[in-house]
Length: 186
Image (cartoon, rainbow, N blue to C red; front, side):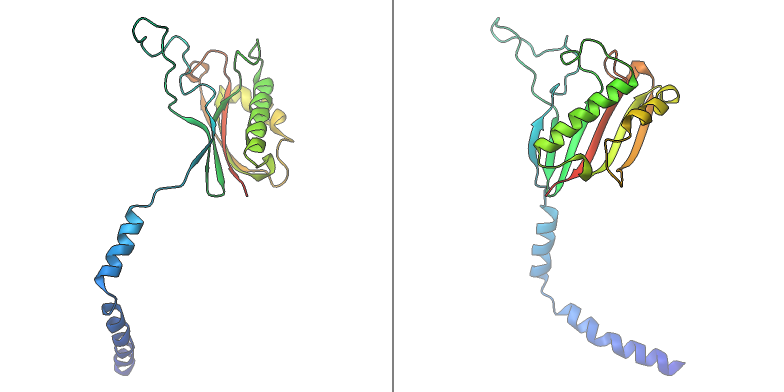
């Protein structure tokens, strides 16, 4: 047994010498490159709401003119490498449809918008990898939501998660679902 220990320790000596031979300057340059990396991202679509979901909130007026449009605080779709990141798409927007509708109407509306954005970015529903939803009153709404959700994604469907909340926590009256996703794009 002592002989094995001696042989093992001898085999590590050349490796230790090789590691010491790497110049510290090269290590510093590699560390600097690693520390300064930032993701490459390209805005594919601006947010529909500009991040301001409350129509009564606006930027202060300048010199008595009409109020300035608030700066967007989020993007609707960002591309980074071969991935697309879509921000939350609500199930109802008053400027698109007069009535909010039920959960089935809202999930179809949100998924149709998702499909439109993905195709506009060069991808498709077949390339969706992950979906996340916020669902108002999930005990009541998840079963009908699933019924309407079927058929939007070919096999294998994307992974999916959801968060439940009360209707008063959706950000605007009438919204029952918000959905976002991560998708692959060539």
